[in-house]
Image 1 (cartoon, protein in one colour):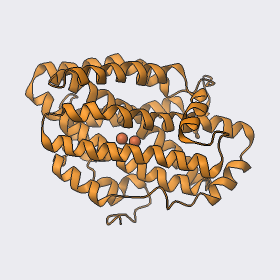
Image 2 (spheres, helix red, strand yellow):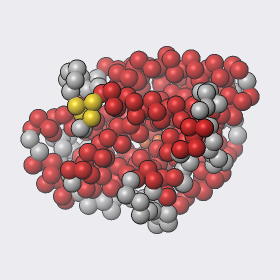
Image 3 (tube, protein in one colour):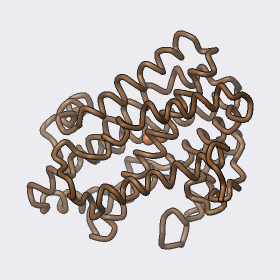
Image 4 (cartoon, protein in one colour):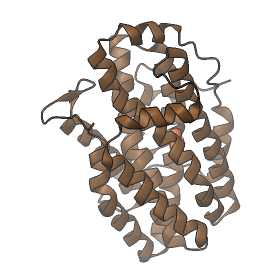
Length: 306
Ligand SMILES: [Fe+2]
Ligand SMILES: [Fe+2]
C-alpha cells in the first residue's frame, strides 16, 4: 500500500519521510530553502501513505515487555502514556481548528489529519491490549489508568493552553490570529517539538536494542504522519507570517508562552538531574527539539538563515 518506502538505513532519510518535506528533515532548511508541498499535494501524499494498526504483529512485543525488569516497564510508561493520551487529546481538539481553516484545501487536509490522529489512538490502544500493559479492558479504562503516569506540565499544555485556544476558535472561527496561535501550539510545539523528538529517541532506542518490533513498525508510521502534519503547519504559518506582522507576533508570542510547559513535558515526574532517558541526556533531547524548531522557523521566515 505504501509506494515510497525505502531502503536508506536512517528513517528520516527514507524517501517516504523526505516526501513530506517537513523542514526539520531537509538540510536546505538551514538556508531557509525548502519547497513546501501545497495543501492539495499534502492531501495526495496522505492517500499514498495509508497503513493499518490491525495488521501489526505484537507477539514479540508481548514477550519483550514482560521480560523487561519492573523498573524499566515503569519508566517506559511515561512516554507511552504521554503519547497515548496526547494522541487522544489532539484527535479530539482538531475539529474546531479544521472548521476555522480559511480555505477549502486546508480544511480537506485537516480532515485527513483527524483520521490520522484517530488511527494513532487506536495504534496505542491495540499495543496496550495485545501486550497486556494494563488491567483495564477498554479504551476509556486504559486512558484513565495510564493517566497516572503523566506530569502536571502535560495537563497545563493540553488541558489549559491548547484547549483554551481551540475553544476560542470554536466560538470565533473567523479569528485568524487565534488560528495562528492554535496551529503554532498544535503543529509546531506539540507535534513538531514534543512528539517527533520523543518518537526519534524511543524508536532509535528500541531499534538499537532489538526490542518491541511491532511497536517500532507502527511508531515509524505514526512519525511519518506527524512529519506530514507538521509540514502542513509550516506552510500555513509561512503564508500567515508573510501576510501580516500581527501573525508573526502571534507565532512568536505562542512559542514564548508555551515554551516552559512544553519543556516540562520532556521530563517524567520521577526525573532527576543528570539521568539518561532512552540512552540520551535531557540536554541532547532539548537540542534535538530546538534544531527541528529552528529549521522550521527559518522556512517560515522567522529565524535568520545561515
Ligand atoms: Fe498523532
Ligand atoms: Fe499529528
